[in-house]
Image (cartoon, rainbow, N blue to C red):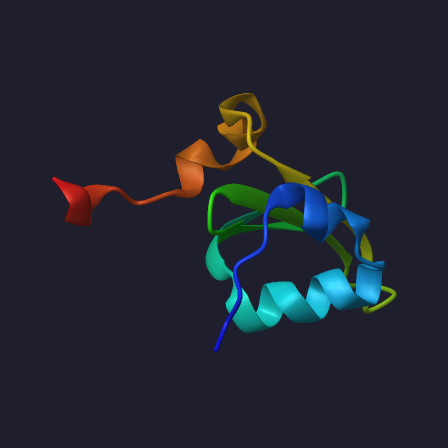
Length: 85
């Protein structure tokens, strides 16, 4: 049984546990490449997680969880909403 957690419980986890939980329970939405880094956007229950990935070093640099739509702006041009209409 999957137990859904909130943003506060998620942010309290160590980074490696956050990554594992995200891969097991999150849904990938899209990605963007900015300033030489790859950013992946995922959704978990009622919040988003942005994964900053350094492909040169082959490692996760940061996981940022958020609820605000302002932080979605860099991804909006990458999201296909054609199937929703």
